[in-house]
Image (cartoon, rainbow, N blue to C red; front, side):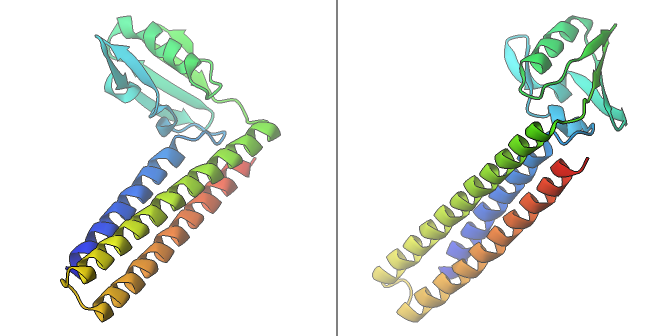
Length: 185
C-alpha cells in the first residue's frame, strides 16, 4: 500500500518535471532552436496543430530558423501564427520556405524572460508540493482505515518528503541552467 502511494507520487512528480523541461525549451534565449516554435499552433483544416506537424523546422545557423512548409497554402497561416506569438519573431517568406532571423535579446527582454522562467519554476514547485500533500493524505487515510501501521505511515511520509526535496532540487537546477542560458550574450 505504501509502495503504491509512493510510486504514484513519484510518477506524478516526474511528469511535472518533464512538462517543465518542455516549457523551458520553448523559451527564447537569443539563439535559434526548433523547439522555440513548439508551442505555436496553426489552423490546419479546422484543427489547431503544432507547426512541426505541417512543416520541417530546422536551425542551420545559430541566428536563423528555417520552416519548410509541406503545403504551399499553409505558408501564410504559419507566418501569421508566428507573428501572433509573443516571441517577437518576424518571418520572411521565400516560396514554401519561411526564414526566421533570431534577433538578439535586449537586456530588458532577458530580465523578463528570467522572471518568466522563475515563475515557471515556482509553479512547478507548487505542483510538486500538492503531490506531496495528496500522497500524505493517502497515507493518513490508509493508516486510519487500518491498511498500514502508524510507523509505516511515518516512514512513508518521510519517503514522500525525500522525493519532494529531490524533485524541488531538480527544478532549481533546471531554472538556474535556463537563467544562465538566457543571460548569456
